[in-house]
Structure formats: structure tokens, C-alpha cells
Amino acid sequence: MQLFKFRGGVHPADNKAATNSQEIVSMPLPKHLYVPLQQHIGAPARPEVNVGDTVLKGQLLAHSQGMISAPIHAPSSGTVIEIGDKPAPHPSGLPVRTIVIETDGEDRWIDDVKKLDDPFSKSTNEIATRVGAAGIVGMGGATFPSAVKLKLSARNDIHTLILNGGECEPYLSCDDRIMREHPEQIVDGVRLILHTIKAQRAYLVVEDNKPEAFDALEKACRHIGNIEAVKVPARYPMGSEKHMIQAVTGLEVPAGGLGADIGVLVHNMGTAYAIHRTVREGRPLISRVVTVGGGAMKQPQNVEVLIGTPLRDVVDFCGGLVDEAERIVMGGPMMGQSMPSLDVPVVKGTSGIIALTKPETIQTDPSPCIRCGSCVRACPCGLVPLQMAAHAKAGNLDKVVEFGLVDCVACGCCSYVCPSHIPLVQYFNYAKGELAARQQAKHKAEENRKLIESKNQRVEREKQAKAAAAAARKAEAAAKKTAREAAKKKKEQAEAIAAE
Image (cartoon, rainbow, N blue to C red):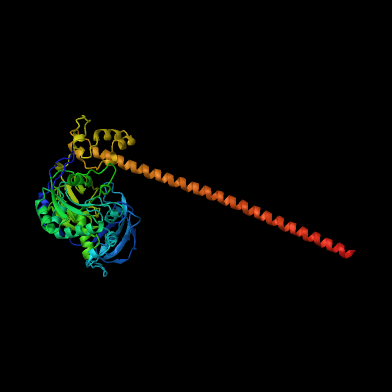
């Protein structure tokens, strides 16, 4: 099929050879599981269990809240020993509410595992609801609740489904291995998604540096007319949703818009696999495949890990570190986040645990911008990073937004090519965080204003009610007085007549 080009992008060394040739291995049960209630975009889940409760594998631990949220399930059987704040898998290391389970070693499933024997006879809403109840989120790292995307067809005319198998981040190969080892299950998940969103066709998109994965998927979908495997050039950030849509369909997502706005929906290959397991096997999202790699890792490999497993346990399972790690990255080195320590858990969006040595990280101090334009040429979104960074550094956030901050996908291409080693993407992430904080403060101020207005209105209503009640009492007293006087006068008249 015809492919299209997008501007910009870079070609970093992929560093995938250490892990992409090895089959996925399953990690043994850890002693403790630390399950955060915030593992997705949107509102955190609300606990359904209490300290001391015995839980079974797959049991609901916390239910979703609001439209954008996802429930959390027990990754294994055991006892809830704590519900409290624990370090988050985030560079800040700030605490996040977490359910701690002491596993019992039995890994016992709940009894009422629900499977759909004939899912294609079910309504689209029923499948989307099942996916939502299973806690499935985007497995590529964005962690957007998948059920919300599946229900977009109700208000958008979705004609094309794209399964993202780009995996353009260096070091990561978890999706590559899933595509090689479970192509039939992925294709079944794609068919279920197509049935749910009522799209006409699906493209399984794989970069050309993964020939084995492409061949496996092509073979699995060869007999299905509306599903096609597509090979695209390896180019970072091909895995970006907007750029993959443009490369495959030639359609450009409008600024500030979504793929659904132009009739295209994108899901990750791992998400399709998770949907298959949920619908066909009744399994909620309680584990995922993680690439454990980097120059400091003794035995790089892809491991299926239970959600909530501490990174330290995963690293130890892979032989530990051969050298002191300069940086531990959750995700890929381009868009992933540096972890403050190994004492944080694997979550639904953890695609990789990458232990980088000092030579693998750039530690050069930044120098002044030479206005070479390299960042402009590399930006796949057509932005002007040097101007955006200058305004962000000066604290002029309105100007940063004017230059297209909302369209920045934080891919890091600009920072990668900058000869002055300016951490451009960090400025943009700072600006996004600051804007979010300002919007939150503005929202809080607006809510406070509404509360004050509501209070003033309530006080005024109470004042008017009191005045009305006082007037009513006064009128009632006056009426009684008038009645007494009239009765008295009538009595006096009667007495006067009797005396005559």
C-alpha cells in the first residue's frame, strides 16, 4: 500500500539486539505487591478493600471514578497489609496512595472468572464495558483508559483502526516479542476492537526493523479481508499516534485534535493482546511484558511481570546490575522517566526498565543556543523549539502556548539533535506542568468563588426568610389583637344592651 512521509524525526541507535532475540519469560511471585491507585490518565481508583482483607487473583481492589478512570485488580492472592502513601513511579518520588498485598504463594484465581464464548454476538457496548471493567489502558505508555476510546465510535465516524507496533524507542522490544509470540491473539483482539467500534478496516503497523514480527502478523491476518499488516520505515517517533496516522493514511490530525476527529483510532499491539485475554479468558489487566535492559543490566530480557512488583525484584530476577547504573529509566530513554530509586513498582504503563551506564547517557553541560535550526528541522510537529524554550525559560507561558506547546508530543527529537545540549524537552515539560498547575489553581479559585456566591445567596435567603417569618408573626399578632379587641367590643355592646 502507499505510505506517506511526515517531517522531522531522528534515527537513534535502537540497542534492541540484547533483548529482541529472547523469548518472554515469566517472573516468579514477589513477596509483596505495591499496587498504586493511580496507574492511568484521569481520576485515581477508589479502594474496595480494607487492611486485613484476604484477596484472590483478579479480584477488584479499587473501582474507577468518573468518566476517565480505570479499576485496579489484585495481581495475585494474599492479604492486604497496608493502604497508604508509597513512593510513586515518577521522577519526583512523591507518595501516591497504594494498596500493599502480602502474597500467599498460592496465586489463587477468583471463582467467577467471566469469559465471553461468542463475543461477536454481543453488543458493542457490552464488549467496551467488559474492557473497562478489566482495567485495560493504553499499553504503549500513555495509559489512557481503553474503554473510553472504544466508545468514541458512538459520537465519531471511525472508519480506520491502526494497531501501533512501531516501538521506535531505543532498547524497548516488549511489543516486538508479543507480536512474534502471540500474533493470532493480537489479530483476535483487533477483530474484537473492529466489532466494537464498527470500523471498516484495520492496519497492523510494524517498523521495518522488526521483520519477524511483521511476518508473524501478516501470516495471522492473511485470511481476513479487512485487516492488513503494513511495514513502515524505522524512524523515531513513528510510534507517535499522530505521526503514524499520517504515515499510513496521509491524513493529518488537526492542531489540538485527536485521531478520532478524522475517523482514525489507534491502539497499541499490547492493548489488543490484553483485550483478547480479557474477552476470551476473563483476565483483567494484572500483568504486562516489560523490557529489562541497558548496559548496566546483567541479563537483559523481556519479562512478564505482575503489576505492583518492585523494580528491585525485577532487576534481581534479571541477575542484578553488572555496573553502577547512572540512570534508571522507566520506559524508553527518549520519552521515559528517570526513577529516583528501584523501590517503586511496575505499573500498567511500564514498558521498560532500562539501567543506563554513564557512557550511555549524555552528561554534557548545556551551552548557549547557536540558532542553527537543528531542532526546528528535527521537530516532527513542525514547531520552533528554540523559541518555545526561550519563552519557557523566561516564564512567558502564554507565548509558549502561542508557539504550539499543546501540539508538542515531548518526543525529545529537539534535545537529541541540539549541538548545544540544551534540555529543550525539559523546558516544555516544565511549561506544561506549570500551565496545568495554573489551570488547577484557576479552577480552584472559580470553585471557591462559586462557593462564596452560594454562601452569600444562602445567607440572603435565610435573611429574607427570617424577615418574612418576623413579618408573618407580626401580622399574626396584629390579627389576634384586632380579633381580641373586636371580641371585647362586641362583648361590651352585648352587656350594654342587656343592662338597658
